[in-house]
Length: 356
Ligand SMILES: Nc1ncnc2c1ncn2[C@@H]1O[C@H](COP(=O)(O)OP(=O)(O)OP(=O)(O)O)[C@@H](O)[C@H]1O
Ligand SMILES: [Mg+2]
Image (cartoon, rainbow, N blue to C red; front, side, top):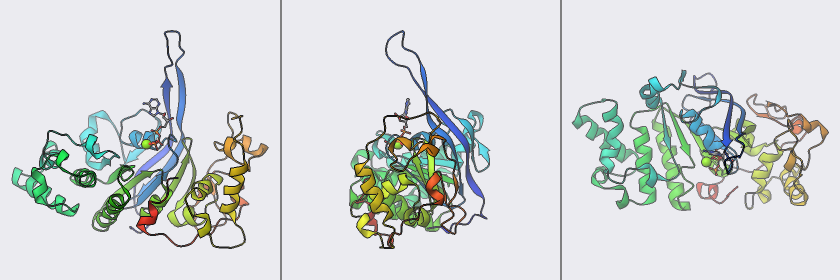
């Protein structure tokens, strides 16, 4: 895993990003309604850093990923390597940022051999002679744990894990500065997913790129990433080093995600706070509120600890209980609650046991 170093340059800057979808409704008299999905999202990713974005289904993770890729309109600013996406600079932009998605089969052209698929980015960007391109593809196949013989095969002749290796290799061909991996291991079974996670680890050691790793699984993100942002309803509710977020969570939603991991609460060190166990119990007894007042904390309707102070949305503020200035949470309780203590990092296999 790359060393986190805030003195390094920033490869991705996301600043005050909002995004809306329009619900069209049914029928000719249906009113079009704007629905906000991303709400004032800001964070940066440093060069070489692996950054995890975690949150439950529908919270807006892929929407953010697609906005960064220039595929969705949004308000605010997104810069990759200092550059904002524009259609006229599309070529230059794709050299900087590449993506790996959940379903490798739909990402690969079924009529193209693996070799042609992987050569395509080099061809499109006029990089090298034909022989050099073929050599680069063979080298990349080795790098992602396949070999040159796979170049002549078609996607249907590969397993799901091998296809995902091809997608990762294809994403790396242009030596991008940022890779967005959106649920890249979620569709794979436990052991194959673990191998792909290990592959990300291996290529991280030898390469020079940052990664935005999107997942609903906090264990997987913790295993791979230097820093983590937790998203709820399109808002970042907690952000910090992987150690801080996983070992010293402060936002009730982060704690809820951790408490939902099987056997996780029994792994909490007994430091007298019992915070995660408490929140798991509090949530089990808590009935989701019907009210969802405008301008309130995004977690208000589900939070057992919410009170009238939470009717005003809290901003991300530094958590005073941890040393790192980078640890921030959007909760009035952040300053008051003792953070939970959790035991050491689990194995890669354990990383897959949870489905938060
Ligand atoms: N093209 C679209 N038009 C309208 N609404 C959309 C569209 N795409 C996504 N949404 C809505 O935006 C919200 C966020 O979706 P998004 O796909 O970003 O979630 P996610 O966090 O990636 O979820 P998952 O973990 O299931 O992939 C959801 O409520 C979804 O229904
Ligand atoms: Mg998604």
